[in-house]
Length: 238
Ligand code: SAM
Image (cartoon, rainbow, N blue to C red; front, top):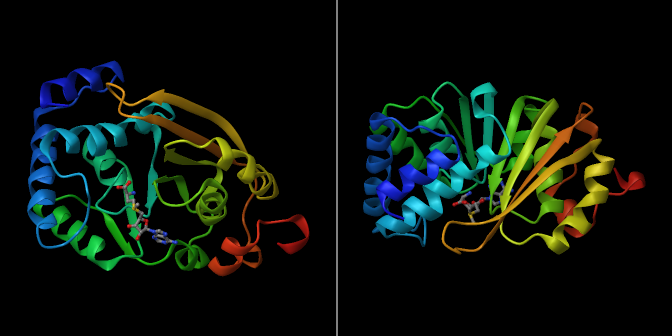
C-alpha cells in the first residue's frame, strides 16, 4: 500500500488524515526501519508493508469504536506501538498508555515519542502485574496479536472501566471464540460486536472483537498468569 492508497483507504473509513499526521507516520516508519537494523522489533520492514500491515491495519479499529469519544486508552502488548501509537497520532486528544513486557520495545517507544513530541505513558510490565494497581481504569483496552482470546480477555478486562470495552485485533478466531465465551461471561462482560473483513487486497482475514464490561473487577478475582494459562476460568475457581 503506497501513501496515496493509504490516504484513499482511510477516507473509506471516514478518516481524514492531515499533512502533519502523515509527516509523523513517515518519521515513525523511518525510525522503525532504522531501529530494526540493530534491534528486532518487527518482521514487517518495507515501506508499503509498514503502511498496510502496521499503520492501516491499526486504524481499522475505527470500524468498532468512535475514537473521537475515547478519553483514555491502554494498548497492551503494544510491541513497536501497534495499534496504540498509530491511534495516538491520528487522535492526539486520547490519553494513551502503552504497555509491553519487553523493555527493548518500550525503549524504542520512548525514543519515538521524544522524536515526535508525543505525550504518552510508557509502562514496562506484564499486564497481569500492572492490573493489580490499575483496576477499572481505562475507557478502552486494545491489543493486536498478543494472546488467544480467552487469555486476552482474562488479562485485559480487569483494566477496563464499567461500560468500557476491550477491542482485540486478530486474524482467524473461530476456535478462540468458543473457548473465550465462558471467561467473558464469568467476568460479567459480553461480546457486543465482531467485525470480520479482508485486509486491503486480500492480505488476510481480520477480526475486530468488541467486548463490553458490565461490572467492576475486584483485586481478589485476579489470577496469576500461570493459572490463566493452565486452566480456563470457572465460576468455582475465581
Ligand atoms: N501489538 C504489536 C503488534 O501487533 O505489532 C506486538 C505484537 S507481538 C506478537 C506481542 C507482544 O505482546 C510482544 O511485544 C510481547 O512482549 C507482548 N506481551 C505478550 N504477553 C504479554 C503480557 N502478559 N504482558 C505484557 N506484554 C505481553
